[in-house]
Length: 433
Image 1 (cartoon, one colour):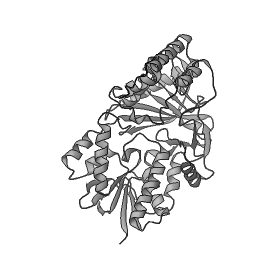
Image 2 (cartoon, rainbow, N blue to C red):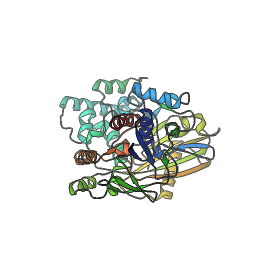
Image 3 (cartoon, rainbow, N blue to C red):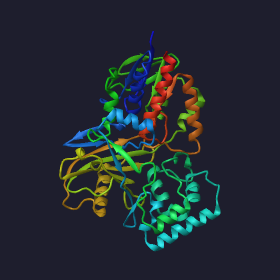
Image 4 (cartoon, rainbow, N blue to C red):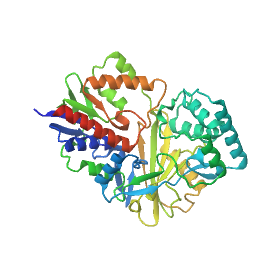
């Protein structure tokens, strides 16, 4: 009998896992179960009135040979490499991103404050980095933290920064040296730094083109099949009104949601699931007639702006928007499971876009659509690592593998999802021989 491998979710991680299982010719019966009526999940794309939208800002940040090779294989000529043009709006100024490396754009008084506080932090050599707040202060000093690090991350996470650990930072917030900060304060440099200094994007089809390429040749994708009531002791689950049996189960669904579906968990694992926290996101995809603002995406630390980030979807690919128009994705973060007044939020956003000069009073909206991402970013608080570790260890013993940004419950990016899926598929393929 072939090994029955079932994958929950036909987003980028689930599709990539199935793609590689087929490649490794595992002697297995592989099926995917997707709750929605199409593949892609949050890495999918959709078309509306001639526009191609992603569900949020999704870009391929490729830094490994294997990641680049896989992208070439999947997309072929349908991809382009783009040099990042990203900015932080602060006190009416457009500061190149990363903020801490481009202080020369600030007023002299603000430059002096940021540099002097960075020097103090360097001189203090604090090893107190238990929280994100202390980690950032030790690296950058009060000036950069007060102007950008604290207000932006407070807006993004909606969680006290003194309770947030720096475990998530990794390559997302590079630890610039004091020399970098000082040079960036007094010299305009063309040096682009950070993990996303360049990125890749499909020429057509949006981010969903990656998922479509992964799905080619996969003939057992079950849509409209939300997985519920997982009986891991008998290795069965409910999906689309049917009972499905498995030998190995790969889950890419949000980890807290998986916890609710698992039946018969021991008390300590139930407690661990309850300790997982997250914020929630709302994304407004909106298109206008006119000329797009120059740049790929923008960060907004100040409270006067209701969103934390705005991206120019149409700047990634010419095929994303008809001529004479442009499209934006506008991102808002709320506390866990909070609901937003979307009409009020939209009006605030439109007013802010006018204030920024992105649109004017005559700008005409061509199309718009809201998306609610209930599970936004996993919260890395003091209980995160222990709770997640307990869950992963326990489920591994039950032949349940966790995969992807939401399945493995981590702050991650697409290249990691693709490579993690390949590694997991190789592991399962060996087991199935």
